[in-house]
Image (tube, rainbow, N blue to C red):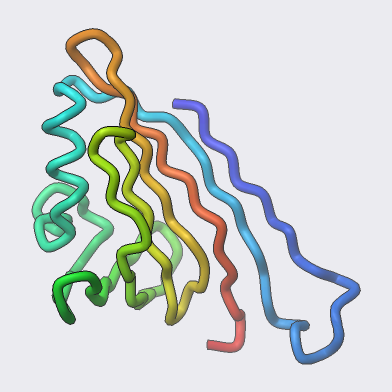
Length: 131
């Protein structure tokens, strides 16, 4: 699976931003399910902990936002509030604005590949090391 991470740390910024790190994530996952099914699963964040082990908890705040608690290989637990920015089933795009331990935008793009789908998550976010 192609995967890239860019650390865009601003080493020339004023001291106010000295602990801020900016990242871009992008990869492509081949899914053995139809595009419409992949999109429906992604459009249902409360189900994430069932199939995504790194997502430990999703708490719905209102119709368009929720709080996610997740952890990966790093010994850190992160919390973000994700608010819906774009939901376009015809284009296969889901986009959320993130705030909390990570600030930025997360976007899922689902494209058809015959009877299967390709999923391309990409994110632009900042993380403050002092949190």
